[in-house]
Image 1: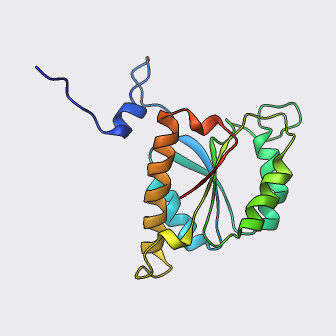
Image 2: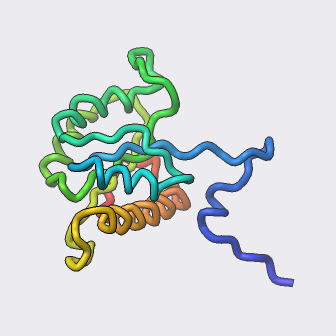
Length: 160
């Protein structure tokens, strides 16, 4: 008899020892519109939970460092720190670099940084809900890969 092969998400998110499904993995999303951010949030569920959605690079640069210090004595945030930060296609490479630079030197667990490359989305998909679903699917696939290889705990940028 051959063992049954389970989908990747079933292997990653199996039941806990107490017989309860594990909590969703927290992530942060940075995007230009709440419309697309909401679609991304919904598509990433139930495996991932978008704890924060930032709609401007300036706000992300100012607030993400504190979120990465969760668990440190200086943090006022509750809950586990994010496992990944997802930077949408509307943010530039400079935005990504500035947000990451603001987070350097923190006494925090490293996180994976995922940057959406708009060139990887077919031009036939208009910016809107369909675009958000396409981006979220690529994001979810990459997060699943990183979790399998433990790459989610490395401070590295992954272009998706």
